[in-house]
Image 1 (tube, rainbow, N blue to C red):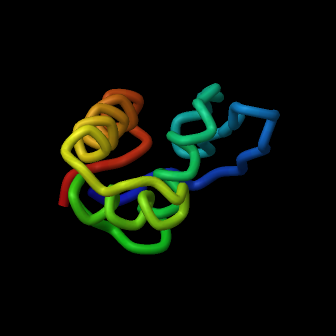
Image 2 (cartoon, one colour):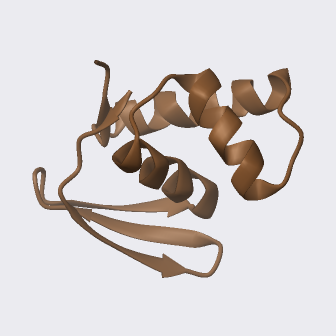
Length: 86
């Protein structure tokens, strides 16, 4: 997956407000989704590779539950047209 947004974001406690200048839409995301989106901006990847990076950032164990969570977030970000498959 690859981040496809061109816009600004602002941390708002446990959430992130993201303005997508490509679509003109503003999105309210969980902080974790914003962090995953940031990682995709730095380095595109699949659910497993992003989960590995997030495990390190979040100081959690890399396991199938984390991969499943990241996969769900990626699907949600894709549905919002914030990321695209490559």
